[in-house]
Length: 328
Image (cartoon, rainbow, N blue to C red):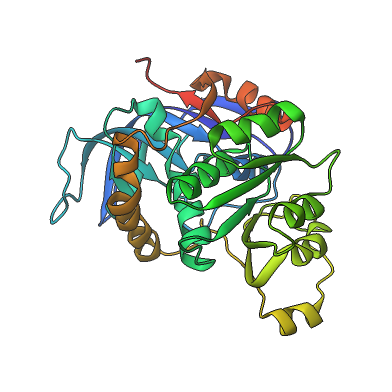
């Protein structure tokens, strides 16, 4: 099969089209003919040598796909050979075929193409797990999304807005801030020219927000603590701004604050399968109702994966960057 491999740690140019043996499904897995795959920031980190695959996972990049189930362990599952699904995988998505745990497969939502469906798993699993499970965003509460035009950001904004929450989001330009508002944010905040903590405090009557989804870390932590409401929660999912920050423990104690974090890739199949079931029950119907939608910025043929990575590193996109493996 055709696949994209990382020849050595480095820039986008180290991605190379190659031939690899077709993967064989293990117990509890299915083999999928990939129609499309998503590009995610962890793929970039892996390419640079900073995010090794978990033991037993494919060395090929790619954490989410959509395509047709060919075969595998389909006993006691809701799927059959020929079904179109989207799936979260530990690696190997940049290829014509991939294996995935059946528990991490979801039907393609009503009305979506395979390309659109492939843009969903990594971001929706991550946002649901961290915003709604770990940080417990509840009815009537407010959310601040750092990096609102990333794949994670557009997912979090839309999903929280659809659930009836107030949403604020940061972005790196005025155009991106307005894009956040079009997706459902009450206010897009241009972090290059505005202090997000001050804006949030002003917009919430000095109360602050209940939950912050943070993919920056570093010196953002101190400001985030300052714009959290009492009993507020910060969920950290990436450290683009650095792994160390200043934490005011006095505020944590006095105001009952929670700072938590997680990474999805190394979690168990059982954990991810539980998220998949919640998504299918609570989120997938929202696509059919038109309350949320995939946001795809650009797609590339498989062999142009290096160009897709270069675009992601330029950070000019709003939403998802995709690989089209099979032409529609």
